[in-house]
Image 1 (tube, rainbow, N blue to C red):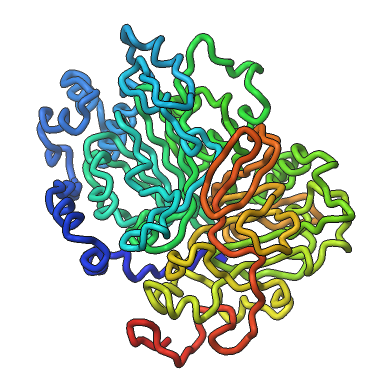
Image 2 (cartoon, rainbow, N blue to C red; image 1 turned 90 degrees about the vertical axis):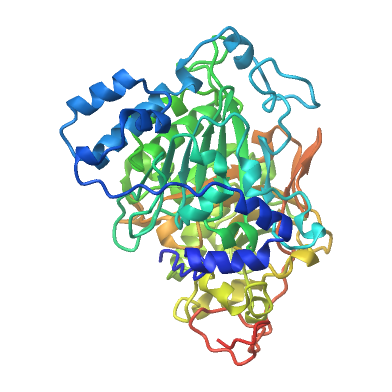
Length: 565
């Protein structure tokens, strides 16, 4: 029920092999100049610690006297001491505690169109585009693919803002060596890295890494980045694991919004924030708390101004949630948002047909009741029609064919991260399945790892732009573990995974319409988010190569590397 993710290319030896085939000469030259990150040695006693001067290089915000005092008072293990120093470094970083003559000017910066200069340390916040202001999400930039494949796309390196002072990242799979090579900015600032790996990560000395506690069959699957700068906090939601193939070969979705530092002119937390922003802050703080992020770090996050939040934040956290908490997580949080923000006129009319299009990269063990009544009931909660009217014509499950995987850039190996076994490809939902075909032909060899859920209006046309009631970009695959399952006559919502997603609604975006197109854009009337696949999606013929991919299947036709599966 959790994502079975072999990612054979995620270890460093395979990464170097794939890097040689993916990178051009100039990129290889750039990589060769990057400093290899120092890996933390095993510390068995305090005498193994570096000198005070060396420690201060690692923690420049901590004075020699503070370092000395902290070490002398510490009675635990060396690793625990490093954790304490990292937390202190976060707490004392200048982005929240320092003041200078420009501080008031910096906090007054607001998102604007155009290229006007800001008065703070950098003007990137004032120059923010639609993506940085949270209006749209983008697809990832694919290395070595044609330019047309990357229309409106964003690189991993583009996520990191100038003036970075510290960072918090979460991901399921992590290749730490590749990550710190790809983002050298992370080598010189305090970093918290929360992952889902079963074993401890080898990380640079400036990084504190851990895996949160989950129950059986659960995992830490959410993928968010918090980048702290002097002027603003950049919050990123991604569908990609922190491994090279995920960002450079597979199709992913990336959303970001920059939130400015709070000033005296900013709405406070006592009731002046819009309801959406209050929920955004509460949800983010709760999610970080469940991940065991220290309170002093969380207090810095909520000290930013979230009054301009443009999306609903939907999270899943492991546990059995009862009472009002049922509506705080998973598909029940989605149901709550849609019921609250979709007005009656947004419901289905006699002249239009709304399709609920679900695209994902892993399928759990599902039941008819969960899919057709419980989950579809949440997807359609903004409408007035009953359960009996929500049937096969409304629900479309988008999934790659065997032939798509075979012809992909990675060949059959790509199927190891498209997690569905024959036992989970149950007959009852065959009627809902539709074939994944890329909307941009030049992106046709990139297998999807993005997870996107749409309510599409009148999809029965061949245009490349479709009006939608809402869009959800998330880490959550189609499983009870990710979205939750109602139990005990609906009095309990059971969730196994950590997941994070963002919900786009035209009412919240303050636009007249929301569209799904081949590239992100916005104007005064509408917002267009990118859709990775063709709508309406074609049906399967159920021949060998045009049948839904299952990871435990056997396929006689060789892929582009001559390999059979």
